[in-house]
Amino acid sequence: MTYLLYVFAGGALVSWLAALISGIRMMGMLNGRLSAGAMMFRGVEWFNAANFKPEAAPIRRMFVRAFVAFFVCLLAIAVLSILLARPA
Image (cartoon, rainbow, N blue to C red; front, side, top):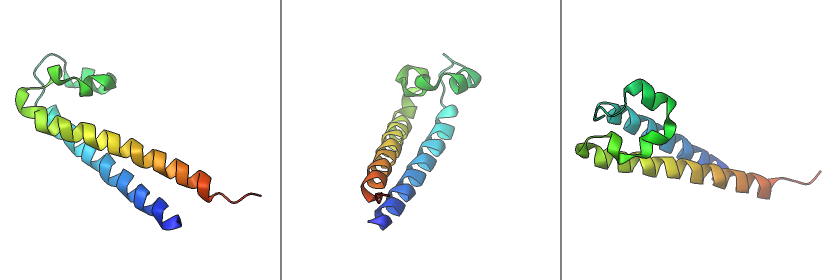
């Protein structure tokens, strides 16, 4: 069971890196509605398709999937940590 923690931690790392790479690729496809600096401070704007050119749609989908996968892995790590905890 402990190995599952490592598997989910690895999955979280891979999904975080995938989201980072997708975000970097999307920075070049901003449509001019918001600047890159504004995007850095308004995190929710990364999920709004209106801020990107249409050709950024596949990269944006990858970003959203990686974002969801990261938090699913974190949730799985939390649940496994609670289940594997030994009572004192």
